[in-house]
Length: 132
Image 1: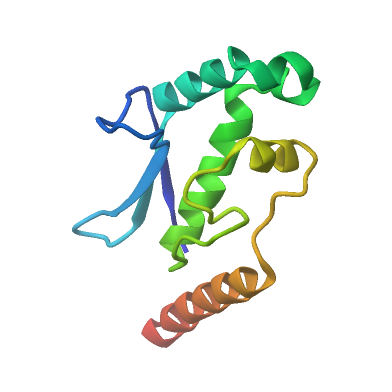
Image 2: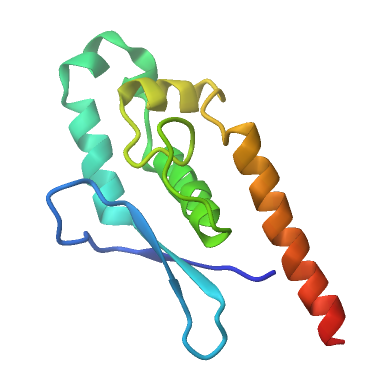
């Protein structure tokens, strides 16, 4: 299975911190993941300038790369058919507690999401095998 990841130095025109999205290439149907780096940088700066980061070293040391990784993982989930969820990587908007969990390697896909992604990858492999 192929995925294309594009780091875009733009912000999406929206009131919320939209950090990524998925589109399918019209000719190839290859999912393209867009990561809006400027929006991520804005979010990191907002966290750094907020009151919680003054008392929480983990937030004060947050870097754009942390949220870029989270955004790519989240959008890969969408590319594999996952919807938004109330918690975990597929949560629509990660809050400060989620970002703290991310930094502690505790912000994960839920077990049922992992199973669905594995099934999607297996279906893709089966389609490729059948096409040969």
